Length: 172
Ligand SMILES: CC(C)(COP(=O)(O)OP(=O)(O)OC[C@H]1O[C@@H](n2cnc3c(N)ncnc32)[C@H](O)[C@@H]1OP(=O)(O)O)[C@@H](O)C(=O)NCCC(=O)NCCS
Image (tube, rainbow, N blue to C red; front, side, top):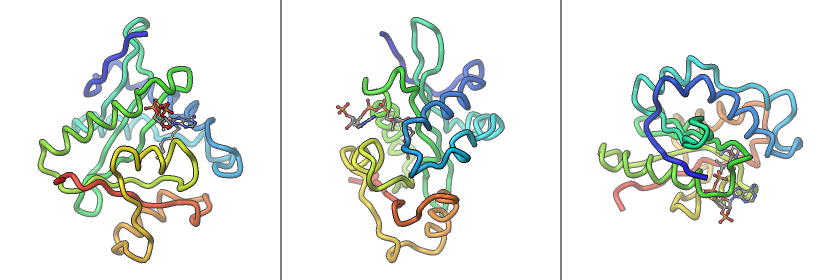
């Protein structure tokens, strides 16, 4: 298999909601209820991230197809990872890690100070995966009201006690 990571090109973005949908099947039903797992971000959200140049994709070069993506938004005065997803058929080959590494290099070059995200605490491909890349969990009592609201929004329909906001210091 041969892959490349790049800032997204328009021709690949129609493939991204489907990657999001199948990647969601990795979550146990008790964490991500069935009713929520088909609720992918609509194509317009990917188009907006593309227009802001804040969307990265992993392309399977043999099939010329997108198989993973990461996209960002400015939230609460800092940079926020809105979604990271890799098609399970291409999982565990380092694509998720490489997408994030590309995002981090770009964010440092853009002089952002922090990169935040929200995730599940207990699933190995969530908080422990981000911890390996240097992200730290910020407990809810330490979040400002904007980040607390963001955690709430991104945990809608989920058990909030299993959710956490994580942040990476981009200056270190
Ligand atoms: C999270 C995700 C993007 C990781 O993509 P990936 O390409 O498989 O990631 P990597 O190959 O770089 O894996 C890095 C490490 O994460 C952990 N990991 C990833 N997938 C895992 C799985 N299914 N089970 C257990 N650990 C897993 C492992 O520690 C892995 O390292 P290893 O393979 O050397 O053991 C992918 O699993 C995914 O799309 N998940 C569903 C959506 C999601 O959880 N997004 C992030 C939520 S905030």
